[in-house]
Structure formats: C-alpha cells, structure tokens
Image 1 (cartoon, rainbow, N blue to C red):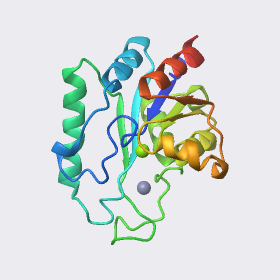
Image 2: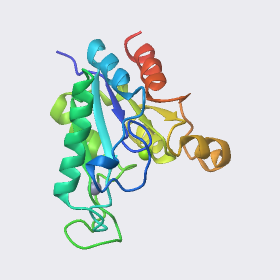
Image 3: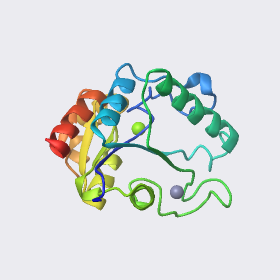
Image 4: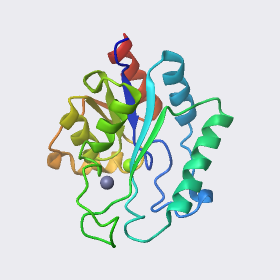
Length: 193
Ligand SMILES: [Mg+2]
Ligand SMILES: [Zn+2]
C-alpha cells in the first residue's frame, strides 16, 4: 500500500493556547476548534501528527515526567472529544542551553526535519503529500525542508508574525488559516481533493 499523507501540527499556539512554558497539565488549554480539526483528519484517513519543540526540558524549566503528564492531558482532552493523534513527536533539546544529554545540536529541533523523517518512517507517511501547520515561521521552514506544504495559523504567535514580521519570513506559507480547523479543511482539499 502507498504511504499515507499526513498533517503535522504544532502544539503551542496551534493546537493549544500559547501560554509560555506549559509546566503543569492544568496550564494546557485546547483551542476551541482543535478537537474537531483532529476528528476531521481521523475521518478522512489522513494521519494527524503532533510535532513540537519543548526546549523547556533542556532549559530545566520542567521535567520529562511533567512533559509526559501534559501530553497525557492533551491526549485525554482530545479523546473525550472523539479525536485521536496518530503520532506525537517531541524535541527536548536546545543547542546552547542546559546540560547533556539535552544540550545538543540535534536533528529534531524544528525547523530541522528529524521528527518528520522519524514519523514518516515509523508511520509510513508520504512527506511530499503532507502539510505542516504552525504559528511560527520555523514551521513553514520545516515544511519547505521536507517538500511538504506549509500553513500558518493566526492563533498563538501567528497573527503578530504575519502582520508585523512578514518581511522576515524566509519561506512563504501556502495558506494562511484563521485556526487549526481552517488549516485542516484547506489541507484535506489539497491532499485528498
Ligand atoms: Mg507554536
Ligand atoms: Zn531535538
């Protein structure tokens, strides 16, 4: 069988509210239309894959156990709403902050493509028929590096980036979406028609 398309979704500011470092599960808030966005992907048979940089680990702001609890809370909130992520991929590193093993010039910190390549291999995904959705220019750069399409959402940092810092974008978005559901609707039209 041919590889599946995927929509890779950033966490903070895209799927959940941007609140700074999420150092307790109670700080995690799904954005209003996030669960519906994931449900649409589930129904369409398009992989829904979370891809997030959590350098708070490297910086020592929160532990692996706290990160695990936050991710479990996210999965539980989605599950309560009938939505399921097909994969969750996290970079815990920072190139210059903290200590080993997390202080590392890794291949997985977005916009480097390590997490997407790992997901593609483990979940049999076709990166060229995939979309990366996020609220930062680095998410668009990540899309470009793997030959996927990039969508900027205007939630989180997205609105400010788009209104005030657009001239610094090194990769243009294929689509600018009001939120993750809008991004998923656009992606489904692109990927499955
Ligand atoms: Mg973000
Ligand atoms: Zn990394």
